[in-house]
View 1: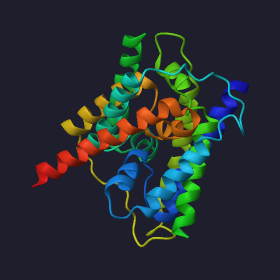
View 2: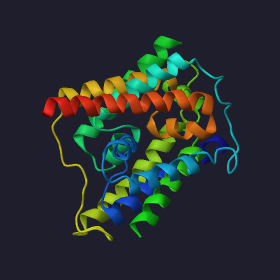
View 3: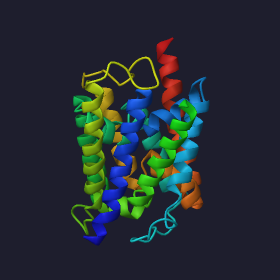
Length: 132
Length: 139
């Protein structure tokens, strides 16, 4: 039960955030989309604030919570670069990532997001199985 | 007000990722490794986030406009096309390789800079490649 507490609180926080954001500004939260707005749109102020907040909040790891699993040993730059290119290009081509499709999209039962989530989950599971 | 909500949303979302340990790629890979030593915790994260998110959409259905904006800007596309499926496949492969999706990857800039630097630089490059591609094909 102990091990399920942090994931539960984390998930509730994420759901609460997408809900507050939706009901106040009327938009979904998609990290890949917000990042591309920060990089390539003319209105960068709000995406900048969001991404800055995300990095600050996300680095509270171990300060507010106790880490249950150790970080992996640093992987090779090549592996990280291949991964980053696929994630960057794939999320834009597929219009979303774990947040936009996985959380916000499934919450509103969007058929596109349900399909996208099933596809990226399956691809990721196969990839991990193949690499192990 | 818009700025405060946006910053707070980023902070809370990041805290949610940190709390659920999605910022740690070892946890994410443990979740994806269903044929190995499976760590199911991220199902709890997704399920609880979606459950709360659904309440948000029920409330949305009862309101004409958001509290601070004049109209809803929720995606309305419904067609499932090759771009969606190919994009999601490439993303899934990239996610499986490192255990980073975009949010946790960005937090790695602070949590694990020796990895975060390479991942985020490539994330930006991949995203830029798609941006350039759409600019060229639209002309």
